Length: 168
Image 1 (cartoon, rainbow, N blue to C red):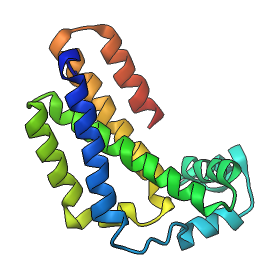
Image 2: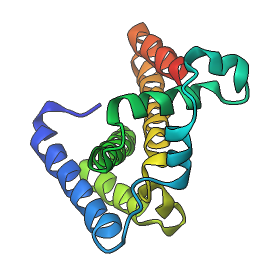
Image 3: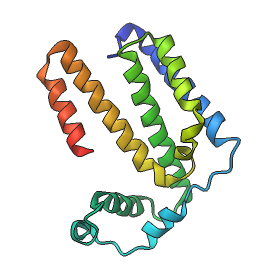
Image 4: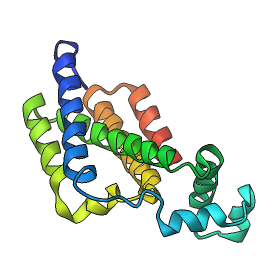
């Protein structure tokens, strides 16, 4: 995946990618960290696993939002940190995905292009997208492990890929 002799370069690129993301998407724009959807989930009755019966169309989403509220409450600063962590997780997964096919430098520039694409700017807007960023990153990691399985034929990569995909 990432060779050990390139670790410091990769860490530097990941730091730089996160910095570019902050400068491009968080500093110049006002962010409504708590969206109206988040307020709806916060103020809704907490049903836990009953969501499978009450909201069969997307019970896991409701459970995830209930967990977010349980851990973050009404603390807007925590929601902002949660959004930043989810964005960093997504950036990391995309960079590692490109690393499977390209050098560190090309992977860095490809990830920068992904970061700066204007059609997805809403994923940086509010905490409602944090869990989507995490799920997207998990899907990408599932693909990464499946590709590693195809390259190396090591069953542990297939198992990890399957497990991550099943969780998503």
